[in-house]
Image 1 (tube, rainbow, N blue to C red):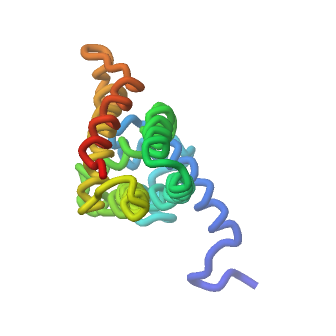
Image 2 (cartoon, one colour):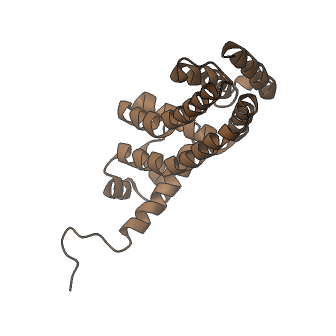
Image 3 (cartoon, rainbow, N blue to C red):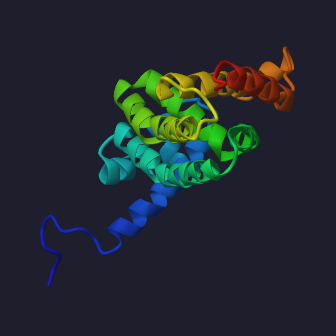
Length: 206
């Protein structure tokens, strides 16, 4: 008996999953260069028509890759929330140092891809913000609320405080890595993190 019209091949989901994983790795390694559908297809060892078959269009390809990367972001967010058991200074120092260390690997590639895709396509920008950037900020907000409740910090607005803590670090990392700022204006990131955290904690001292 032939395959019912409209039914998927048995290996459809497995093939799609393999393509998503390969494309996600390409985006991480792309350095925020916004590769075309053709380049993504070549990297996955298929033709553009195959990607269109499984994902519809380029936005569908990138969206699927972001959704795949989201699970790694969720693991990182769970780890960040576990830092609530530590004192505020120790928790945030460990958080910022871990982000700085991981940035040269998949973490920096993930954010660079998100920025590049988001600047070119507002829809993909929303996906990046909602699935990767905002969950990270939300985990930091939760920590700030806990430290405020515990009496370690005075945090009248956790969202503002989370942005105040994270934005300079993310900018410094983009500056040094993706934008190659270390070639013209190198920054000792551990010293920067220490100085930034010191100022942040003084500003939100109880």
